[in-house]
Image 1: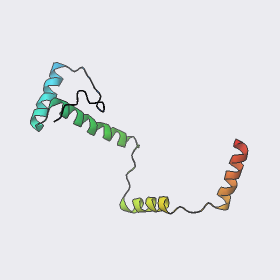
Image 2 (image 1 turned 180 degrees about the horizontal axis):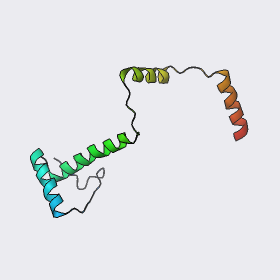
Image 3 (image 1 turned 90 degrees about the horizontal axis):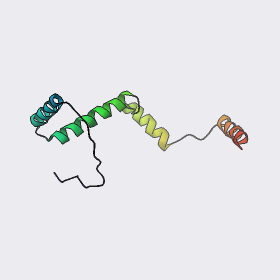
Image 4 (image 1 turned 60 degrees about the horizontal axis):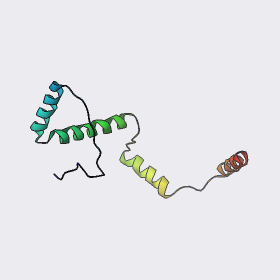
Length: 95
């Protein structure tokens, strides 16, 4: 694996852990055949992604909903008369 120590696209992350935690993390990394750094970073990435998903920052659609969503983006309906009036009112208020 290439050195990332001086690569500007990588940033340093430091954490203080107990001796027991470090032994635990190191053993888990060894069992996976990875370095301690790679183990910690990949594990944090998995957990961070899950936390974000659990907080509704990611929307998962089934196949039918995905098709409907993409169709609406690619083939938007023309604005209705009511929407045009609302835009006109909004512009008058905001000017």
